[in-house]
Length: 583
Image 1 (spheres, rainbow, N blue to C red):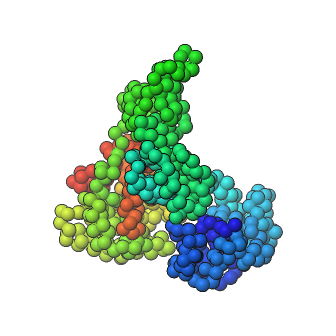
Image 2 (cartoon, rainbow, N blue to C red):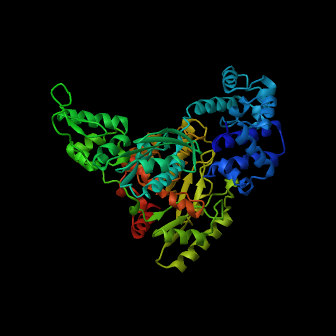
Image 3 (tube, helix red, strand yellow):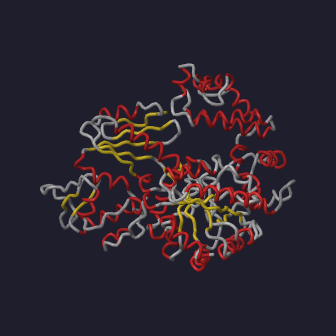
């Protein structure tokens, strides 16, 4: 049986890891790693591409790699991979997935302690057998234990930044069919969860046949898991499972509400219905008797919109992002749900990077891109000097950039306002990367954690507090420093951090990049409840990243955030006044 795109990409990635453990030439390692990345990005079945003779037209796929792809498509395995597994224990690849463990350490554990699995490594670390190895120590040993624990919590769910575009493309494709009357994404992806399990898509149509046929025959389908008249399921080449349900328009509201969830929200909805003498499921409301048994002789109540579902229960309409049983039912009953922030409320982006540090576009290009997206003002915030890996700016380069930003700002007039800023590193010892006399010469200063992220709670908290209390620091960028899926949030005393931000009038960021979504929705809700100022920014490193703003908006909505809580909904005049007074 031939393999799917995802399975072939996985094998090439594991080959790269094994070659790296063996110590092969880095260029050979990269050839397999780049092939894996290229295959993951291919939207078509490799079987079709191979049949057309087009494998070598793909990025990073030469004749040697193409031949190996054909071998896997024909036989379901790769002889080269099998030889590597006989030489390099396959469990070492899993060990490399632990944060802080690279190929050299994986090989060290194997050669010195005969460790070939994550479980064996955990036992050795708990027995304190790693600390005495070359290049190790007690701190490194504890870091590995922490990494093993973090690895065990990974669920295999897809990041919303990967799942949402794929799901939306399928929905758009199916809605092009003549019989499709209405369509929507449902489930956790509609609620804006950070990670997604399976994708649920609902289509209203009188005839499901053409829709289901088009769905199961899409080019990016690896396997058809189920194919029926009302529901079909497929696994995409990316490994994502997608379920499509087709229903009649008259039941649209109850079905969309039901399949959007969450389960806890739905349970409360059903209880409210029962209290009113009704049974609620995905099809309709049905009258029930005193024993909660459906009265078949009485007519059902059909809802073709979700609004009618909530109206039937006497509730204010609950936006999907709030449906997590976090008090939204009680607020809807009292008609006191928040007026959630919307994309059109955003008029600025306060965090972005250019070619001066690690960005891909120039300052003029980013200004023009922001203007095209309707922004009224922006801040250029390239990395500070300590972040050498990101080409951080020396003091001399920083001040030169500020002059450049202000010159361009003058040229733009009132079309858009560009401010000179920085994303300054909060160093591991708690100090800030630039002295105050330099910060005083900038328009806007962000302080962020980029290093020393495994420090203890007291240290991390104190570093954040030092930055918040600095009179020139206006905002803390991606406060918890998390990145999906490999880096968890820092361990900080968030009650103390939020209280300090409120006291010193320091903005906390909701970073819109789907790999961060930081602050998360829970902390964002806590922050706004305390009156902490928030800003939703893209942290863009290229023009296309400016379009990630919607992920930040969704994350903020999940935190019950309104436009009034968010600084970059303010006019430039209001922002300038605050910025001046805050200093």
